[in-house]
Amino acid sequence: MAREMATSDLPTAYERAVCYYTLPKVTHPVTYGIIAAYAVCLFEAIAALIVGVTMDSRPWTVAGTFALVGIIVLGIAVFTARALMNDVRQRKALATAAKVTAEPEAPDDDIPDPFADHMLLRRALAQPATIYECGAQETPLYRVEPGAKRRSWRVVAPDGGEVCRAQAHGGAQSFLFDAWTPGRVNVHVGDELVAHLEGRFSFTRPRVDISVLFPEERHFTARQQGIYYGHCLIGRIYTLRHSVYLDVNRFFFNEALLAYFVMSL
Picture 1 (cartoon, rainbow, N blue to C red):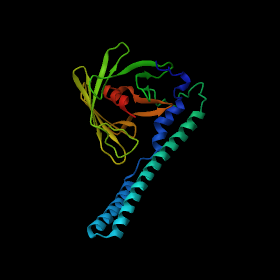
Picture 2 (cartoon, rainbow, N blue to C red):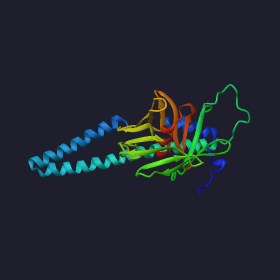
Picture 3 (cartoon, rainbow, N blue to C red):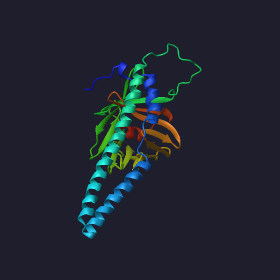
Picture 4 (spheres, rainbow, N blue to C red):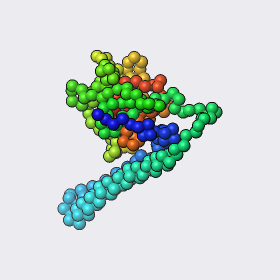
């Protein structure tokens, strides 16, 4: 049985604000400039190797081989360093947020709560068996079960009734090492296809197009762990203390976003 999360383990108001608003600003995805510069260097190394092989020139062949190996190693180092820098920035921001433990006794009525219309869902990072709604006390909302088919799963209510089920098709479609993007996922409620999710290849920011078909057509985009309706940010997924959180506006929450939350990260 999974350990129940203590109230002290839940995000404080300050940590929630940092995860939702600050972390996306302190982490930077791989830019097109870096990719273009790397591609030019890689092309030049390959060209030198081709010239050496074509002309049967040992100096060109050796130079091209060493250049190609060096560029590949350099690329791995650069992209790994980029990921490590983002991780360090995130840890620093979260460490600062964790030090702010004092909560105001009486919130200022002149300052609106940015999360008043939001729901905060939590699942374990390693084994997403149960999904909770965070509040004064956590409430189990859903349970995730393996489906009958390969690469499928069911989301059921505490009473055992099926909420939705999803079937994944295809694999990752991202240039980044630390991103998981689905190829295509169909979401069903009963016998009805209610939504499908499709990963779009990207050299910089992985993107998932989320199309809700029923009961009302809506189109969402998930990128850099943010969920957008049009150009409006309506939710975000983030990790904190070995848990994954979905912080989303209640008005937009649906089975498609639930399925994306289950399979994300």
